[in-house]
Length: 422
Image (cartoon, rainbow, N blue to C red; front, side, top):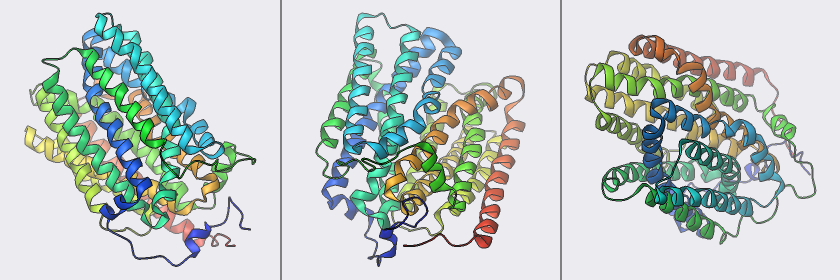
């Protein structure tokens, strides 16, 4: 038997078949079911996101929006690692269903309060916290299920296809929400989102894969997840690089872009919406590209992907018009998506199934937790300094972090002995 922590997964020892086009993966029943489940919940999320931010702005102004954004970021620190442990200890299918049902249940009282016209800011903060807490359990279980339904050789295509679809649904959901807000009550959006999670849970319950516990009867602590990362030095550095770069870029984006749109370009909420659509467009384009073109050395490539922020944030620093800012947003969406999809795919390819949930729990923690660290460490700078020089500094810092990580990974993997094989 191979060592479940140190050995390369046995699946990688087998001869690899030709990689099928990403759309052919939808012919696989379990992946099709999982894809439809994620699409259903994402559309609901896009609708309620606009409503949630709008109500938070009405109830508490800019501080209300910050409070809600912190509430949907902080849970990653409390539950991210435990979500990965649960994904390796219990049935991943049942864990995803439970997380969806919890999110549905959290939205029901919010929809009722909105219908009654008594939706306080603290209620929005509480539901944002509950939704993100449940997502901290859903994400590692979902990520660990992907290799089982598409095979490890196809995880990049599967991740890219799902990510591109999610971004497209987000754009469609935002546009639809902007129209419906003029005619429908706020409660409708939360009710639709609750139903979308119910649909997702019903679909996931039909999965054949993910039913047995991945580590039933064995130890499933977070230390085993870190031990699985330790000999995979490029992957470990990619996770650390992702954490630092996401903190810089997320804090800059959340605080700096709205300020730049309003105070420098003198555009309103419509202008910011166009910028967000540009970001999603870059994500969709890169997702479509990664769904067709396999990338080797994914961990190292995920670090080099942050170089895209040098021209993108540099353009934001120099942007004198909304079209230039939209073009920069396309670059930021492309760079972030490229890094995240390749990092997740590298973990799904390299890490044995017995500890995959815990490793993906670490990645989920740094991905979602970076929103909180960015808000706390980087965003306040935009309240005391002009956004243009800060974006220029963020462009240089993000690119430097990516290059430093890739160079360190190249040196460490060159000098390190190869992982033991069975």
